[in-house]
Image 1 (tube, helix red, strand yellow):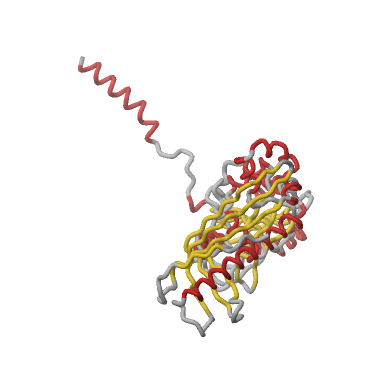
Image 2 (cartoon, one colour):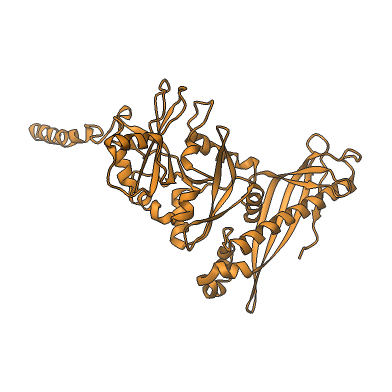
Length: 411
C-alpha cells in the first residue's frame, strides 16, 4: 500500500513539473523596443530614410503611408532619433519612421535598422495626420490594428493638425510625448474642450455602424503640443471632412452632456464687461419630436455652477438683481454657442457627430427605421431647439446664495 502511494506521488510530481518551468515564451524587456505611441501620416520620408535609400537601402514599394513608432529608451540614453532627426539632448524616447505602402511591411522594415524588435503590446497613443485622414478612409489603415493581437484595443486615438509624427517631439523636457498626450486627457474635469477619450475599441464600433464621429485634435507649435478642437470623420466616407475649433468643441460636449467641468465666458450686456460662469454640475437631454413627416429635437440643459470671475465692479456680488442678470446672460451665451455649432455641423458638414440618431432610435424606433439609410441628410434638415437653465450656487469666497434662472425658450 505504501509502495503504491509512493508511486502515485512520484507520478503526480512528474505531471506537475512541466507546469513549473516558468513562462516558456517570455521575452526580456531589455531585448525589446517597447512602443509608447504610434503616429500615422501620408507618405513623408524623413531625412534618415532619404539618406538610407540614396545609399542603396531602397526597396520596391509605393509610398502611400508613413508609420512612426515612439519607443522607450533608458533614462540615461540620448542622441538623435533614428526615425528622422531630433534633439541632441538626453531623452527617454526614440522615434523610428518607415514609409511604404503597407503598415506591417514597414514595421518589419524597422527591424533592419534597430537591434531590438518592435513590441507594441503596451502602446497607449495613436495619432493620425490630417492629410492622411482627408485622403484615405480610416478603415483602410486601421485594419492592421484590429487583425494583430499585439495592438491594444484600449489605446486612445487622436488626429493631428499637420504631421502626426511631429507631435511626438517635445523640446525642453524628458517626458515621453505619447504619455504627455495621454495625461492631457485627464484634464477633462477642467475644460469642456476635451473630448471623452476614443479608444481603438470604441473607434471600431463607429466604423462598423458607419457613424460620424469626432477625434480630439492636437496641434504642434514652438516645441509644444496642445489640444485644439476636434476633427470630424464622416461615417459613410470614413474620411476627415473638417475641424471644429475649441469653442465649437466646447459646445458639442455641452450638448452631449459629457461634461466634467469647464467654464462659459459671457458679457454683461449692461456694462460690456466680461464674466465667467464655472460649471460644477451639468445635465443635458436630447429629446426627439416626431409630428407626421416632421422631425425635430429639443436640447434641455440644466447646469449648477458659480460666478467664478466678474469684471463688473460697480455692483455687489450679493445683489440678487445682479446675480439673476448674470445667470440670464450665461444661459443666453450658452444657447447661442450651441446654436452656432449646430448650424455648422448640420449645414456645412451634414454629419451627426453628437448622437441625435441614437436618441431617435431609442425613443422613436419606427421613425428611425424609415430614415436611418439617409440619416445624415435627414439630420441636416431637422429643427433643433435649445433651452438652458442655470443655477448660480457659489461665488467662491464672496457668498453662498442660490439664484436659479431658466432662459426664455429661443427659436
